[in-house]
Image (cartoon, rainbow, N blue to C red; front, side, top):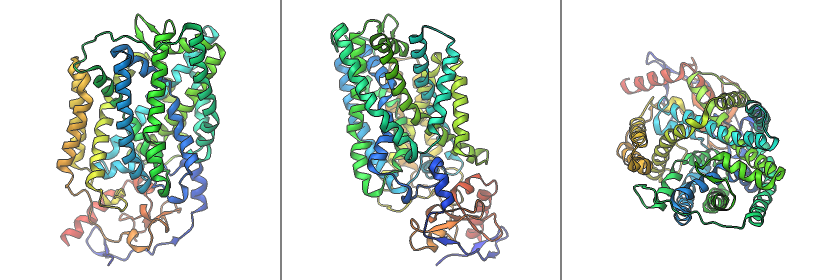
Length: 534
């Protein structure tokens, strides 16, 4: 039985009748072509086909950052330990993302929406901010590689102009959504990337003689070399967040395929091991890549362009264009989620894409290389803790096959998990900044363990606001039914709809409008309190 809603005075209110339909709102579908339900649950009618999603996600394969990391790790621990660490990483990443993919496909939630359930309505605001900041930094890194490649090939010029050119051509590439543009763009560029990388290996082998022999310099790393290599890759657990935001496009019937293949071990063996081996190959084969200063991203650029000339430039252009579509897309969607919650504004995603482009360019103008890796280390610690908490949450709620609560008016402001996340991350950052090899090597595993154990200890805490009149209970199938929102007057799946306690008739409101409402959550708390005391 549906409980009656109450006003702030405690008096009962007769809720306005729901406007229910069973077809997608044409205005929402048109908007979704660019917005991809960025602040809404992903309806099953907007899920992607297997090939479409695989092509869109495949943009992650081609980051020169993975080539750089393979070379960097081999230069620190030698080829053998680097390969062992990378293979172990591929297996762990594949297994972890199997779990996250199945969950995202079932629920249709973004990182921002899932974080509401984990940390509460207010406590969750940090997750999309960290996600957006990290993807912006990666955009800076990958975009800088293109700029330096252009500068290297054309023999100079003001690097600021090359930066600007890269940003200006990148922004329009993310104007469309995942299933309306990114899948096609990355699918079209994939063959060029594969052929280009094969040509690079063959070309460099002919010119210099192929080798994978990067000797172990014998550094003191407070762990075996392969363990150190594995922990370095924990610093890029941001791909777990990437997985959630992409895997929500999975059709439920394709979830196992995507969990096993698209986001599973085969993907990481190609992305981390394949690119890592090419990085090791370049360091061992091409003169100048492994210099006196070690491995640098400009050294990788010089090695590729120096080996293949204009074809090397085109290879870098293709690879970085593919990866930055994903980086900037996720930066814009998470900046949008953050802004709608904190600043109570709802603007088109392309507005946030432009904002991300401006931020990327401004960061490029600074001495970015002096602090970007440090910033990524800090953010990486927060991400490792988030992944640990998300995995434990999925494990302890595995028997709940319904959609987890993420609606602003149904959640408390914050949960003890916020403290767990922050404390574990601060300890991790302390270890990173300690200057000791023990701290540098073990900060990520220790952070993961602390976050997992801490969340397990507080996971029984009740995060829900007990309110009546749930629109989910007023329809037979909450996935199939669409309910009109009184604020935007658009219809969304009943799963995300709520009664607006700040409205005089408690009319229905969508998740996006609820998040941007300055009054709704306060009114929801009052209603829940009145319900318990009335």
